[in-house]
Image 1 (cartoon, rainbow, N blue to C red):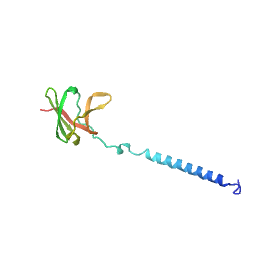
Image 2: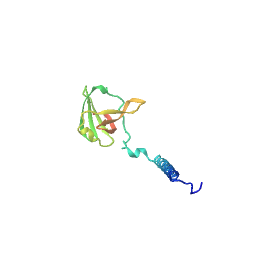
Image 3: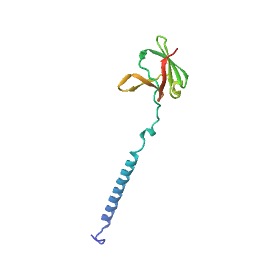
Image 4: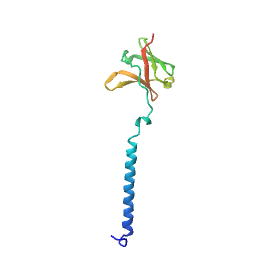
Length: 132
């Protein structure tokens, strides 16, 4: 094929194909580089729990909880037992919370709770024990 037989439509087709190939190469390179990003850096990290509640109380009988400070909440069951719930990091969501959820350690151990969730924040336990 000589330059005399190269028509404008053939030239424009080759340019479009070249741009498409270049776009695919760029996407491949960016995808390859992105695969090495630390995914956990995009999400807030929750510190590991230092203690766990292994269903020592009937979780259906929690009657109240009382905010003491951002790292300390007292939970009372229907019998009147008071449990100190202390957190590894401040958990200000309890200040105005009406309820909370206990979080299990894993799907294999459904009666071992290592954190509480309140207002979309996960607060891991530093200590969860019967208050003396």
